[in-house]
Length: 137
Image 1 (cartoon, rainbow, N blue to C red):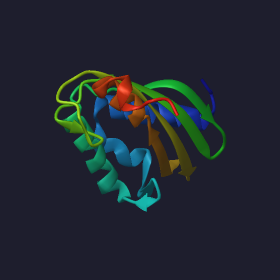
Image 2: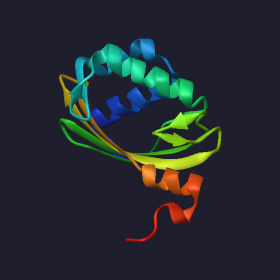
Image 3: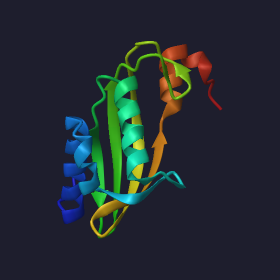
Image 4: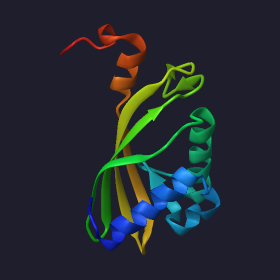
């Protein structure tokens, strides 16, 4: 993993998420933060995370790959968790799933200003429905 100052900030942000100390999220995220092209603001971003923790009680962010430069962080996050009810439009109903998120952050003045997230929903669907859910192309 990278040892840049921005990488260190990102590691602190992930520690904040894993500790669920979302009251301190403003130390890492700008008030006008955007997520996947939409301005959600800090309060909305915090609420998205609260909802994730409610739907996935054992949610933990595990960094598999981290690359950082002066203004951007790219990370591959691994998840092995047990969502309850529906997750990403799929009826998970308490079954354990493992998947990845590829996420790209833009930092402005030392805080996250923009988040672009891609979650591997195909692997979740295949785990829940079997390989027939996604035949090879």
